[in-house]
Image 1 (cartoon, rainbow, N blue to C red):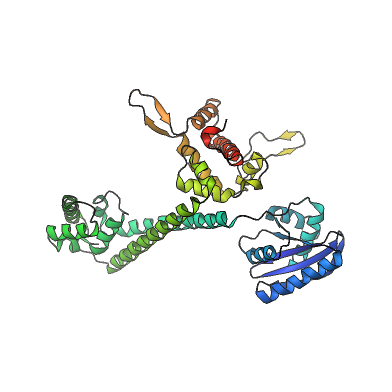
Image 2 (image 1 turned 135 degrees about the vertical axis):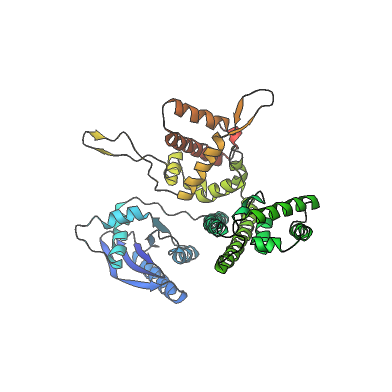
Length: 411
């Protein structure tokens, strides 16, 4: 016998259907909650199937983001083989019937039938270290995105309170700049104190800089306050909102700094981290994202599978005598990995510097730039050439990780 159990996973619960063999469903489906008591009930059912079929059943379920995490951890602890199916494949199996019926019980039943129809490989357990790294890099990306939106809101309020403040510090969002703005948010607050007092306050916030620098910034701040069109702020609500936004941005910066330190410390424990950084144009953050999203390279036995996982493989459309000549990339893989690779390519083909002894421009990644120029010379548009470079970069990364060599060592 070849037993299988199909799980239709939802938030906090799963619908279960068992098959003892192909075409032999066992009992009616039932649901369990994702708690200790119900999972133990599921374990009893697994052992029941095992005794009837004479072997451990496989468990098949659809990928559901993080909802299936309790089930996966439970199955790994109990040493049961499981198969996580791509939602696109699961949807195709559910849509094969002429009847339009959608219930959790039918979905679990269809997953069992899919197990016997398709040649599905068992899901390979991923290392905890790389999963931790992936969680941290994703959280860093999420907070960075929210922080960027918050900065735009801060700018909007600042334009209505103190627009001339923008030129006082080189970076408006540096810690010292935001702290100064928090203390002196209006022209009135700046002009209410003397220049020396203002300089002393700035110097106390940034002790690593000289007194001369603090005096220059104090003068710039007073000049900005004098030029500011809002000498008297009519709306106290703007001042309150500005203070809130400044504190939020400062908190985001603190969280991002902590995440960056954790990512760097964890990534340094992974051997592949140094290998990826040997590629010119790839720094610490991009390298951490790439290795955490790819995971163990053993999951891929060919570079084309890594390309498909990234979602930069071309789609194919052919029907009858017609074959499409313009095909977009599938974009069905990891969007975070795809974005990191796009950034890596753009950094790699960018001109780094000029030689002091000549006017020759040296790209960061000479081999990648030569490939990019070749594609452009062939008449390829910019985006098409960039995608081709991403594809080439993935083949290099695959070769490096498989052979455990640096970028300079691969052919």
